[in-house]
Image 1 (cartoon, rainbow, N blue to C red):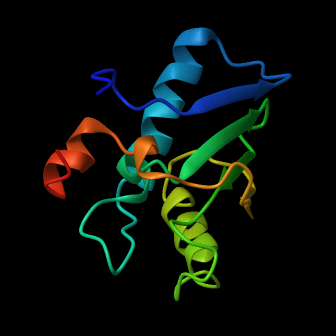
Image 2 (tube, rainbow, N blue to C red):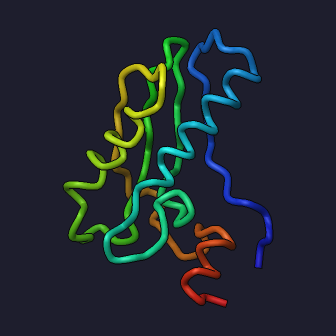
Length: 122
């Protein structure tokens, strides 16, 4: 099993933020996303590997590509709004857009080691 920590791709979009500012802002985004849980799984969406990409613009507008554990997930309609609401709590954030994507499909291999431990998947 891969022992590397889970990482999301943060794609600066012409950002005027310094690398240090972008790193600090990204950490705040991750912290906010980790407050969102799939109601059926006791692990946050970040550790589950549901966040595929985060784009940060120079004005701190944020676009997130995320997926679900299954396309027919009962919270499919609510999850993007839950993520958007959590991100809007980040100080200084601009507009937030959450896109639901299903390519590539989610698999358990996307989960962090922490999530696998929590779910006894070893």
